[in-house]
Image (cartoon, helix red, strand yellow):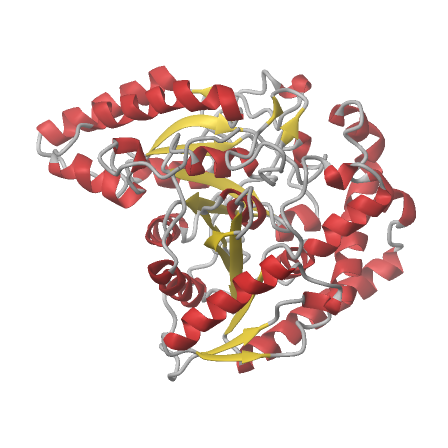
Length: 477
């Protein structure tokens, strides 16, 4: 059920920061309201794993002191955010949901955490994920257990940034900081009824090292992008502006402008309701049709097209790249996933041989070929409107039940995987609820050219203005 906006935690991040800057509420009151909400809700959904209550209160008090002294406050002054257990918060363990890492205390904030903190936002806790982000799409970790979808406990909240999606959806935080290498922001955003941004490769600086100073291999370097989850597209846009830019800690980050050149009107939007032609559920198709109608009425040139570029080839290349990177460490990583935690990756590890050096060189060429195909597609259609997931929201752990179920889930999320491989930005935005009970959120994603997140965010804002946000909600069931 929707909640009244006079509750501070139910406001958007933008509204919360404005209230703190103008003195309508103190940062301490805002944090205390969120901590009370967490105490009420988190026992039901298990989204926040390490609560930073005392630290958050101390940072809020400092914000209030600075405001009383007349010092300028940042654009996210006092706003609480959660941080996925993959991403470092100074002085807090970065566990990846693994018992062996429970004491792995971070010496410094990861770049995106530092940027949000510099804007005045306050990390209020770490958030749950699948173990090592490798045990599946459902958010369940060996260290912290299962996270529950607040709309319906019989379906998954998605993952791997499921803890952030649930925390944001239920009002425990105004923003979540997740990451996405094949749908890990977009899927939980869609399943929990919030908005999520997967940025272009190199848009936000990041640090994805796990142990020690060594950087990971190409799959982890190029496929994983950090990004925000929020209850409004305006909040995504604000977080996007604050997170973007170069940083000496990440040489991949590029100084691309936040907004590109205006495009000739009307902007063309390609619509693909069934990527790959493998079938799409009627409710998902209806969500795409609703979004297409809204964009057409708003003046976009909306056209159905046969399919997205080279989907099957892309999914095969993605599997080969990741298996080649993970194979040498798989014997040591597998036990960390816990009993049954290997069931998601084992089928693809078993059926896909790592690339030889010659095959790897060919794979690098295939990667460029796929990126070129997408560049040509998006030259004609600057935006692609498509599903986030082509099936209904699945039951928790379906992808780990057996190889056939794993393949079904991989197919349904295939476009998320493909666009991560191509390095493209995308925004997941809610479109409403399924017509039959139990009512679950529906969503679409808007995919666009590299470093043109502004195009996708603008179109997502158009959808949101006609299809109002669904959250925050109180958990059901």
